Length: 166
Image 1 (spheres, rainbow, N blue to C red):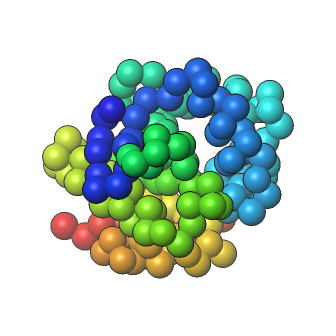
Image 2: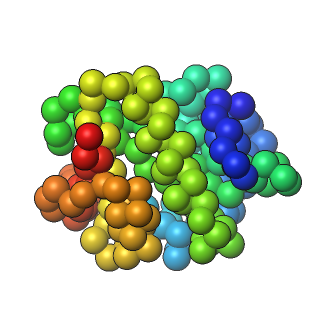
Image 3: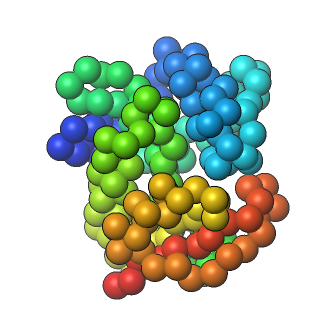
């Protein structure tokens, strides 16, 4: 376990998580319409994405999020360098649809911000979001991130950039 919140565990991926991520996240139209490239992934694309971007036994890349009480995988999060704005780290989260509306995104955001402040105290803390993803925008505002600008990301399309004000 890498991070622990009141209700969640944030941890490195295990091999048995690959299919769960595909079934709960990467193949879900409603989940993926605002996440990453804005489209569902095939099982093969999901496997490739996981192998390329998820971390194993480290805090670099994406990490899985589990409910503490059940151990059930509910999504993923990450903290990565953000090239669009100098000296910045970007955090994000993607949750399975059955975990929406439970306050988990806010809880993940608080944990990631706390970790980023501790580990990268001299860097800007950022988040990007699809402008149509109003729920995630509300979470970022609740976490005291402020809108900076809108960009057109080559891989992810139109994104609003939010920054934590120090």
